[in-house]
Image (cartoon, rainbow, N blue to C red; front, side, top):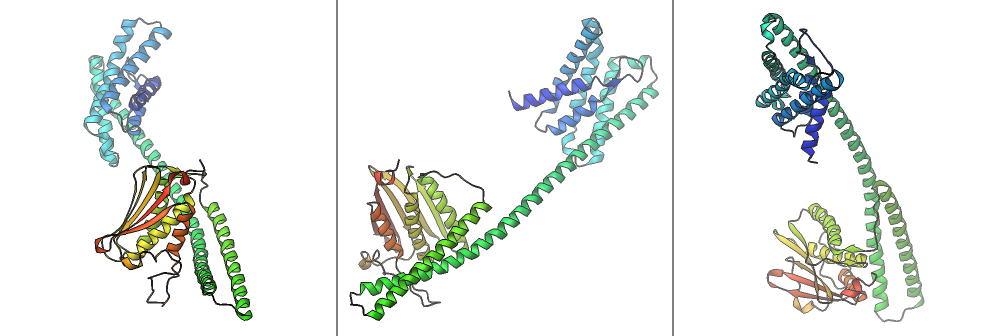
Length: 427
């Protein structure tokens, strides 16, 4: 059933039922009911309803309800009952048209205007009903006017009070809910800041571990025979590296446990769609770029989506390449575009940017461990050169191929090609 029709039927039914609570002020067929309080109140509550249409439906329901009660309970003839209650139907039609034309809903924040519209509608509709009943023939006009106006003022005042009481009650509830959410947000923020502190500590531990491991690699890679002292030093460094990595693991384990308590739990499966992987990475790097205050447009395009159980490896590869692209972008209007597509039996990822270029003569060296062109002039530290080597190792692990194309003005494109069955073998 159409929602508006359902709400119109509710208004019509409730108004017709409440119309049975009434009294006869003049000892005639003219009655005063509390339904006239409920009717405009419901029209204010259901703001999507057309007032005039609803008023007609209410008039029909009121007429049917009163005629049925007369015929069944009071054993009155159908024609007599119908003529008895038709004027009341016109009351509701007239009432609805007046408050619709005078835009009652548009004056709810102006109490005086609101009261004037309802009182005017009440009095006018009552006079229409009294005219249809020929009531002025046998009753003095002054007493009728006094009763009708007083009744209209009382009913209209009740409507206004009810509306504002419920409105302010809702505002209080909303305010309390907002305050509760704000307090929860403050608590979560405080907890998150605590975890960020430990993440920064772990980042420094990771940097030290990387430096230590690279130093060990270089000493072993020299090919020189190590004497006892150097061997002992190497053993000591290796043990220290293991301790540092263990410390990092403990920190991260504690951080993960705390984050799971702070944030709502989310069930994760053994597979992720590429579109989901891109959404995760984009969310991370958009905030990262904003923190760096760089003008970089990040775009992620999935030409053909698929699920993979190797999402951790894919995320690690793309993170490293996008991180490198961000560091290479230093000009305004920089861009990084990541594209996923499928060619025959291969899954292909393209990472394109217009950052700092790479010399063609070092094209084959950039994936070697230790090769780097990154130098921090503030600290004098040189990068370890392990990022792209790590990417190459993970790509080889999935039997993939990584290549790079150079274009004009520093534009470059990393291309990753994987056998599709390698990324979906766990399915």
